[in-house]
Length: 81
Image (cartoon, rainbow, N blue to C red; front, side, top):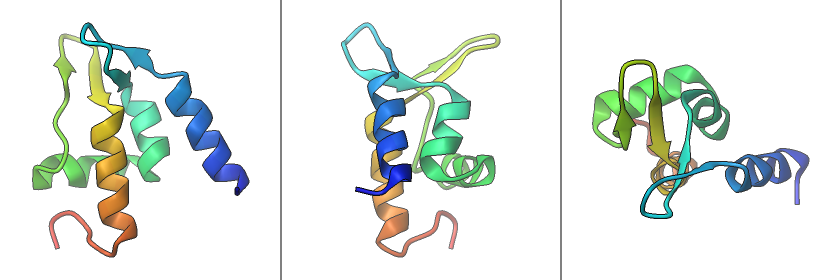
């Protein structure tokens, strides 16, 4: 297992839990999981990703949704193309 994969798993393990028990991640962790902030923005623009919680200064994304986006990108897709 690569070091980056281990780091990603550690971030996912450390993610916030939502009311339903779902793991949630802040935008900085979302950017780390997907590679950079631009990829997160592109996923949102393409409709692949939507915040589970969006309040005044708090945005949280589902870790499962982030993993689904990462899987699509690894399969060769890119949001918006």
